[in-house]
Image (cartoon, rainbow, N blue to C red; front, side, top):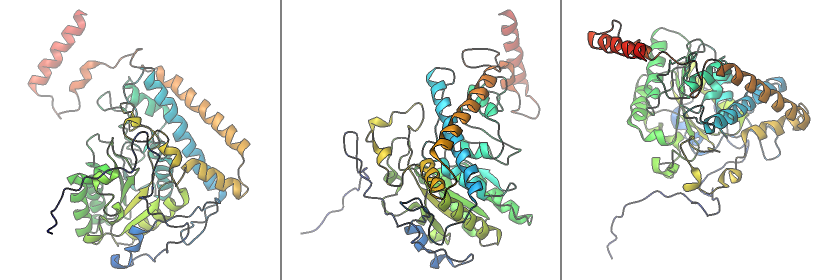
Length: 413
């Protein structure tokens, strides 16, 4: 009998009403993956793209060769930033539901990635984030009020109302503007890293994108340039299991780990527990050192889970089990770091509760301040005439004519 070819349709292991099923995830025991020396040939690093770098075990102890041995005080700082990210997200989600901002995206379940990598990178390194890296902006010095004002598109909006909410930027913090066109930031990061190398600097670039965006051509173009020119860049794939409503298998995640995407080009890949702060920090430090010593790019896949909806425009109960987040085998990154600090005697439930209360008050104070600059339902309002500015070095005649007509209409009102 001759077998016929058939089309393979990627399907998730569970849909609404089913029991969550993460049997497709290949999880290595904590501490079981070796840590190779910097400068190892890519062919000797292939195991890093199939295993899973983990430091925190099921007893919340740090084990294995990737343990960065960070001081407890530094871990307390990390926990605070992660908790602030979560509290900020909760408040902004509520504000969107009240109709005061048009759109928002949470980082629920992914907080460790932004904070761990922000702490592992140097201040001079350039970051090209995606839309769930708000913790990175916070860590790099952006004030909560400024982030809120951007989401409100008010008179203090850094983007002057020209960007979708959550599309922040920070020149002072070396964080590039977020783009709603997915994966465009990846070639930007590679290009910046190439320029850094040309100038003989030791600054590197880092960029982030989701599992779904790896199917974009920009991602593959960037991989080629990074490999050919040995750009000092860290390419982060945040595999949170779901794109907007498409399972990660639709982007090829069921065939081989995303960390292996660069192997054919000679780019080492590290598959890391994206909910383990210590593992992310250690893997980022390794990749950064690898790049600074002239060994080129590293692709890091963060195995995590999007705990909430893709955005305020999404209802995840339509395409995945309602309780899937609670069943994710790698747990909650905030809870895991909290329990580790309790385990080593530098934290407690009482301290955690008090800090959470303190952070909620901090976010509330910031919100009250941000409202003074206007919301979607309350003034003051942005001057609509500014929409014509910052497009051309010299405003062309047709825009000047449109601007003049707008001002006349506003004057009549």
